[in-house]
Image (cartoon, rainbow, N blue to C red; front, side, top):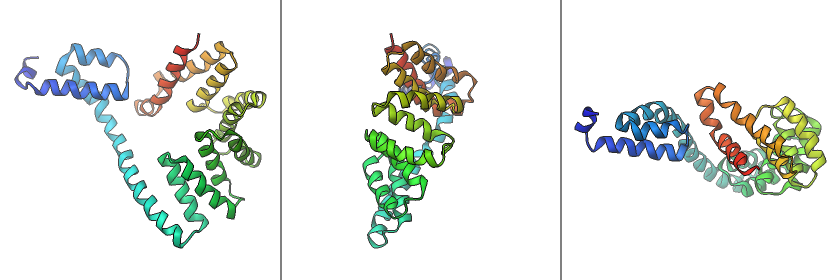
Length: 243
């Protein structure tokens, strides 16, 4: 610790940086004690182990800047050339940006001229789920899965099950969730199934599927653990709410 005392107040700054990152990213709780009790040395270890690998996530910020620029370009282009391809690309960009209402509108324009393509219908279904328009999502996702049950590595049928659950079609949701969880290991699918089971008062089963998400963590490489952190947090929060 003598070395870090010579660098005062830089040691405190290291701890502050580590604490901010810990609060925002919520890695394993053990790191909190490392930062607090080992002081600047612990903070430095934490930064090398957790902060530095997360720097790769900064590319998403640059992707977002590029996406906004491309959206602005395409918004101008479609005024002059309202082609299906332009509207579909614009819709995809809005979907990635989380502007689900605008994405749905653009998919409507693309699908109106080319209703035989599955991808814009599938992606419109995703936008409709985020908008809470589950009946519309059911129609789109049924359209996709009836023509290709394996679409998007079986994610389409899992999302259809989720749409059924929120559209009040519990029997269909249950049957399709059971099918989806036999062939998919997506945390998204497990979590949506757990939420459905909880809504049906099937608490023990809901806990089981939430715990399956957390059980994947020890065997995952660290870069996958970082990507899956939102699902780990959601699963943990659900377990705390369940009796």
